[in-house]
Length: 242
Length: 128
Image 1 (cartoon, rainbow over the protein chains, first blue to last red):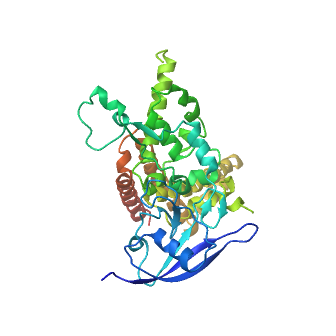
Image 2 (cartoon, rainbow over the protein chains, first blue to last red):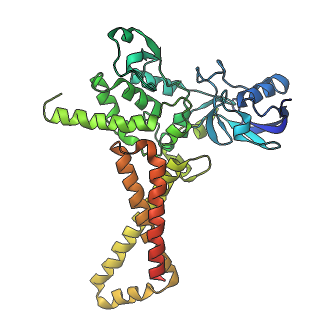
Image 3 (cartoon, rainbow over the protein chains, first blue to last red):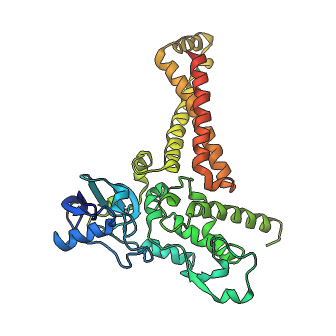
């Protein structure tokens, strides 16, 4: 028989021209359900005016990113058991560092434009992807196969980054990781975008982006790698090897 | 809708110091800022104290007598603690910025903090 927990789902609410507040919803849940299931239940059975984003329910679309008990999570793959306990509160809030459109929905337009600035790839040849146990040598024909980029563009990294909270111009972890994914040697035009005070040097090594990334992009590692690429490119330019 | 509180702005620097929901890297980030502010404050205090030399040995000696005050003594201890916490945390940042131990930054942080605490303990014993 499925385990039953009684929880209080506390939902951030804010509608146009109204001050924000939290609404509480008492509900019975199976702790192995996901946080998104609880939000959907509150919407379906308690309050149809709750606004939230969701689509795929299996961590591919990146739409359901929220803060769960203060920490950025992709709610479709975050089990209730992992973030609260029986009889406790499950607080859901919109992502930080984005304007709130309504309740749990934020405007991610600026973030998407930054991803476009670095020409972030939605798909990439499998031969260029960072995969576990890659073959020692790729067959030339393998480059015709493509795969989705690891980054879901969920925005969790931007929400968790303390520098992104104070610097609107900062490109942010996901766009910088997308630049690293392409490589400065292959795309030297990205150097001018990432090598600046709001680019790769603005990161202050809090590593919060990597801690919350639900897709193993590991943006912090990529930013550090991008720094070495930038330095390498600068040296090459200095000695006329570019 | 007033969305200002949800948008990034320089005025939100206070959020750097809230450890709730943060992880090791975030705590290290906050610690570096707190110690940096403390050390900057100390630098100005130090320069002000040194400027007393211009008023002759008498006024400087008078100031030195103050260092026996327990509050000033605690301040000295805090400066030494901040130097080691900030300096060792800084080495972690330098290493990871050069691509060294990037995926082990948590362990690096904890290791350096253990070293810092040990040094601070030794200093505390010697000081008191």
